[in-house]
Image 1 (cartoon, rainbow, N blue to C red):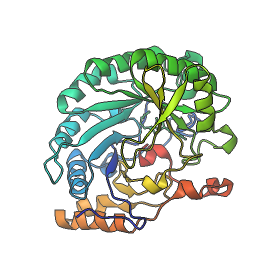
Image 2: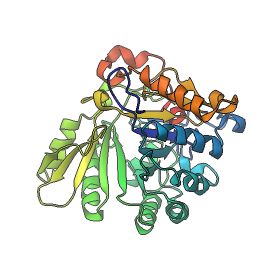
Image 3: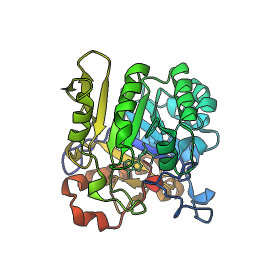
Length: 339
Ligand code: SAM
């Protein structure tokens, strides 16, 4: 029984945040002025245990979820993460198929964890990297974390077979636009798949402004001025990145253009936060309390019914409705919901 939401969209992808903590302080996500030493992250008893996450994921898979992405905060700071991956890797779709099990990380701890994660059953990773220039990247990640260590983490992922490795680069006007072409050149040479992300108005801490968004069309123009490209059709319904191929055959890149080309109509994604709230849109204001259902003695059938009801009631399409006025609405920070 695969539920459809009120706009006829199925539930195929689940993002699971395993922590609201992060070892970076990216200016556009968790600026250090706000998320300093005194910031109160979730206490441990409010965070879902691995057993609770696995049980929830199993219920989602019964409803049609085929892709699980582990995220955060920074997922690699959650202790014993390979244990969770091993638990999730045993899940099968109702027809017996394996899940697409992946993870998004800043890469800082990948050198140590890529191999154990691969052995536990992780299929592939997405690594966030906003520039190859240490001054630009260090300022954006808020802690002067060096590019070389992320590149080493990416090498570790490639060596461990966590492929294809995708790279997320948030582009912010006046901050890292000059890094776009060097990043594209590096991705072409390395064989990783680069995806540019339009800077989004998630949360409130980043003081988002529309004029800081570099539209997808500008990104394509910058790159095609160096290497000619052509668009590729979406691989599947719910693929959020528009894709372009280099005409010289040296790979492709994607753009996640939530601001200038919203993809709400094809959004098949739900998010489970570290404290067990279910959000049906990245820009949602309220979630549904899955943790309460996991902890109140409900049966697995009752859990599945709760999730199905939530999905059937879904009518979110924030990015289509986005306007200057909506950026002031109350919103949940991305690290708290799960990026
Ligand atoms: N810590 C992990 C990481 O760095 O990939 C996972 C969580 S992070 C919130 C997930 C992704 O969201 C990262 O690629 C990050 O760059 C992106 N992100 C965070 N805030 C954003 C914003 N305001 N606009 C666009 N992307 C954003």
